[in-house]
Image (cartoon, rainbow, N blue to C red; front, top):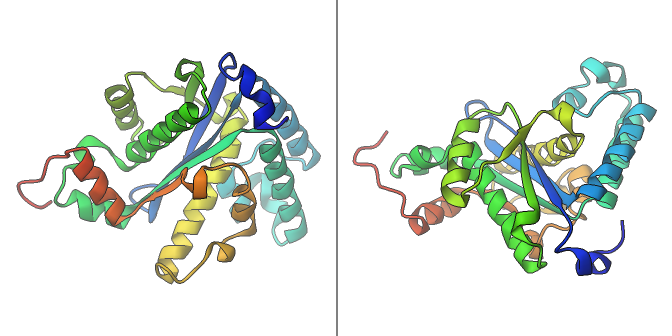
Length: 264
């Protein structure tokens, strides 16, 4: 892929797709994460070709991070083979770095979400998945404005089947006046890259909150997450966000969420 500067002149005419996937569940994980990447349609075509070649070289049909992480199903024979596991992810991340323009992630910390929801009608307006999703969409829109990308050239595509899909659809239609596109993982390899990004952030949040806020630095995170950080993600990583207690309190205040008359 050429540099972004070399592509700016035709950016207004280019068609962009941003693909998002989620990781984590509100009932049994410490966070719900939505993450994804944006690129032109042409770049996604090349991405798909490179990605499928890499999967074939390692003898698997797709990247599914939970299966990969636990060495099950297609990855069962990889258990204990750390070199193969490492080089596999390195190759996939290299493809992402080559083919995409920008990355976006938002994490919702569930313990903090529940605290805020106790006195603010947060869940009535946005379920965790919807809150993370609409925040990512806003980050994409802000990115497009910064780089003079016409908003109407961007297609927002979410992996189908995630919990609270209906809440996300309602929130997007209410806040942005369009309906997101839903596709399955089989429809595009881009969701596998988004799954990798979201899963790495889920693991990072789990580790940070288990250790205690402020006790770990980014250099303590997984090497794969650090490698993904080399993909553009905003000034000072601003397009990789976390809704913790202060952030959600501020979000509710700024958007005028109703206060609960009685605690849940």
